[in-house]
Amino acid sequence: MAEKPIVMPKMGESIAEATIIRWLKNEGDRVEKDEPIVEIATDKVDSEIPSTEAGILVKQIYKDGDVVKVGEPVAMINIEGGASAVAPAPTAAPVTAPVVETPVAVEAAVTAIENQIQAAQPAAESLSNADGSRFYSPLVLNIARTEGVSMSELETVPGTGKEGRVTKSDILAYVANRGNAQPMAVATLASPNAPAAPVISNQTPAKVEVKSSISLNPGDELIEMDRVRKLIADHMVMSKHTSPHVTSFVEADVTNLVNWRNRVKDSFKNREGENITFTPIFIEAVAKAIKDFPMINVSVDGSTIIKKKNINVGMAVAQQNGNLIVPVIKNADSMNLLGLTRAVNELANRARIGKLTPDEIQGGTYTLTNVGSFGNVLGTPVINQPQVAIMAVGAIRKKPAVLETEYGDVIAIRHMMYLSHSYDHRVVDGALGGMFVRRVADYLEQWDVNREI
Image (cartoon, rainbow, N blue to C red; front, side, top):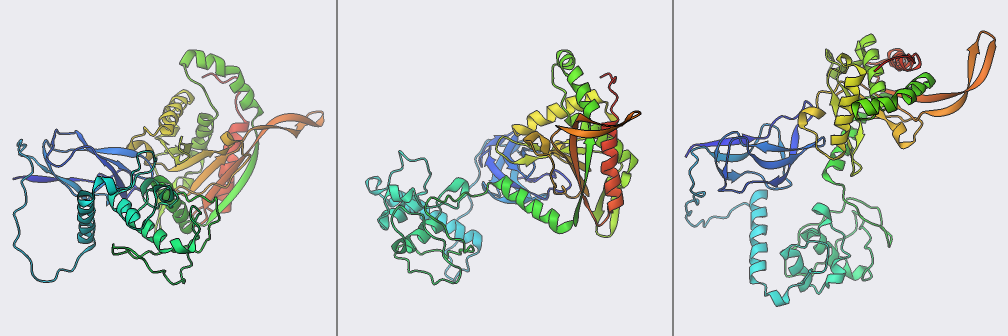
């Protein structure tokens, strides 16, 4: 039969892989062209892969949780589109020669053992988790029953699997150290050089590798990073390793800007049906400053500087789960303030609930983060690679400031804020980085109080 692969699509210039979250179609299911077959996730956004052909899904190449590189096939489609189920593979002749198991073969064998244990184990002899909130695989429950681990005791075992689940390695490690810990107490992580305690089990124990030497105290909690948090952590470490960060600071008097917004925000809300915040105003100032200093709008490829034609400004948004995502406003310099306001509100609202598309989080050439929204007066942001600069705007606060007048200097209450500009010192020197943030501050300070929107 004619089969075609469904490949992992490219979802951004800095995205090289994605994680399989959940299959929407099973092997043997009929799928239509452009019908989603699998949910995927990157460090930027969750999405779906649609079928490029109509037919029968004959093979899922990867499982839930697997990481797949861009361009690799994730499934096979029979484009002849028959209604028959997937044909079974021919029975192979018995193999008498020794077989060296690959990781895939080992995993398949473990799965087979789990199924056998589940089928052979009488229901009356199994531990029950009907009242518990954690999921336990049949293999974990069987090991716990064999070793005399009660359900209440099993609930205290730290899990390193997905969503905190207890894995085979977790239960075996707990059983091995059971004699050295008090019941119902949090175990202490063993030293990497400590000898392993004997495992008393009718199962072949997996090798447990404990890399941390940090001890735990009673009451401490183990929290496994979720997929997005792990990717964010890797991206931040990579950025600090790639770019020598330098940060310049400027304090700006934005009194005219604050007074103007206070005057127009109610009428704008009544007319447009949405709020005008400071973020689109900051983005407008950044886009203007980039046009004045285009060498901020670059990327680095080895010893080559790539000067970007388009000015695409990303804005960091905190999601409901605490993770960070950066939707991008494309060609921000070509929009007026009304257009920027609509774009900011639309992207920010969908970013917070995880409804952005892959195209909306790629292609950024410069990033703005508003740390002032959390009450912070300034910050030292980490560059969003492969860009070379990022700006943080702090909280606007009333402060006493010295004003120069024709009658001499006076002290007045003004609305002041800090701007922090982090940049890649490989290609952005202090003069350029400092002048850029100063220019952004100038645009904000020179705001026209009679401006119409």
